[in-house]
Image (tube, rainbow, N blue to C red; front, side, top):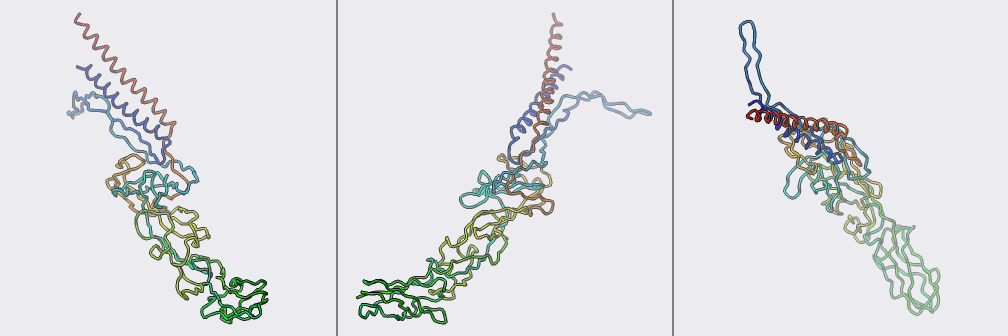
Length: 418
């Protein structure tokens, strides 16, 4: 009966526009979600009942006679236009201006996703990760070589202490010349930082200065005032303070290994890329590198890091040097409509969507650039969403009116029996 078709069309309208309300509601709910891309629903007419097919008669053609059976949902389409970039000032926030996605990997099972959300953080191991712990991918392995200059050793001093004992004393006074035993006093004598010479004993008033040869070695001590009242004494050649060790960047090796982006200072060993060139005089091991003797706090510390527009992750040290330790790479796809939304701002199905650039440098080959300290906001336009909400609401009401009208007519038909 024709009225049943009207009921079916009304029911189809209610079902379809209910889905439309879900899509709009989801867009509005995610209007503040970082990197969220809105959706729109596409409707299409449902199956048509053909009452008469068109034909080509001689000299004329007859038209087809069809009655539609309602509406259905054809698809939901993602809107992947650029969202607004807003400044956050947070170093771990990275926004994309243009095309492309970050590639992230779950360290637990190795599953790979792409995302536009750049609200990252640095975890306890120094990896750049999403809020759910997935690691950002790119080039790693950037190292640096530093030149170390100065005269301090790992203990912060220049040479081992030498104790001259016994000391020759005549009539209660220390004699004025004392030769230092072989190796004593150390080499690398710095006139600005002479060895500390102290006289320990039971007298008073004695003072001394170092005797230095042409090679800069301490060879003896001259007593400027012998003091009084000594019966026993010792002279201690203290470890001179030396000059501070300074580090300066000599060269760097750019990152060249693909993997998890890590933002942390390498350890103080050659395996992690930190090497030292010894320009100091080391009395313990002359002419040999002294990296193993250095205290960790002598090395420049990590002050901050920067992400360039092309993805370079540079470590800024507290001595003013900086070097590239990693580079964030990006991925792009041919058909973003084929991507599957996995929640937490993640997409899967990049291979199905057709990867056009798998690990590209930001700012090249059509990829967008990166902006540190910024985030891409949701691209949902609240004005459009509420206008569409009103339209869908009215369409839903109209669909329900079809059902109530058909019901009224059916009631009249039933009443014909009376």
